[in-house]
Every structure is written in C-alpha cells, then in structure tokens.
Image 1 (tube, rainbow, N blue to C red):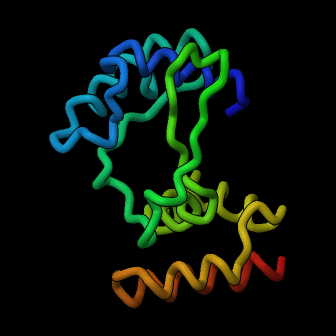
Image 2: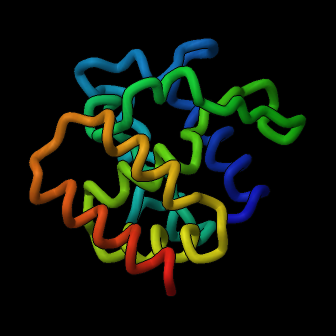
Image 3: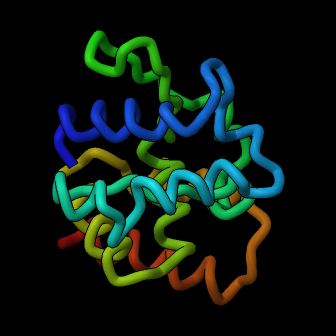
Length: 149
C-alpha cells in the first residue's frame, strides 16, 4: 500500500469511528466490524480504489511484549487530523509470522531480505513471547533461512 493509499484508508476508517476514539479500545470488535464492512476486502471501497482496510480487534494479533510502547504515530495533513498508530516493523513481522498466511509469509520474507527488520532483533523479541514451541521453532527457521537468502 502506498502512503497516499494509507492516508485515504485512515480517513475512511475514521468516518465510521468517533473522533479521538482509537480502535485499540474495541474489546467487543464492533469498530473492527464497521471497518471491515465499510472498507474491508471485497467492499465497495475496495472495488472503487483497489485497496482496503482490514478491521481487527487488538486481541487478534499475537504481539511481542512492549509493543504498545513502540507504536509509531502516523498523522499527516492528508489524514485530516486523524492519527493512526502503526506497529513497529519487528512487532508487525512477528505477528504476521504467527498468523502464517501465504501473503504474510511473502511480506515477511521481503522485509527481512531488504533489511527493514533485523534477524537478531526478531530473535530477541521472540525470546520474550509466550508461544507454543513448534510455532517458535517454525519462526526461528524462517529468520535463519531468510536472513541468509
């Protein structure tokens, strides 16, 4: 997704949320459902603009300890006063590898290969997460294989 597309999706998502209300405060997933219905995959928004916003509940993603403190503020003139809080790339990478969908694997391999994330930092964050050992080993193997690619 391009920056202008991100800004547009943020503005559109803000239209269904009240001003100054973050989707992080969405324990029952109602705001996530609104975003999915209005701006999600296969929506009219998606058909019109060719990209979409996926509504997720904060509990959907498995994230490394301390992720909230590493959120990056994203607000530009083009978001018209709406602020998005974006995951730090290492935290995002780990969440996507846990999800293990083909599109996530492709994304993860690419950002590791081009150096947006560092294998050593990913391993350090994994060490501080509570997860099943088979999942941890699967992710560690990906870090090792893709760091050498």
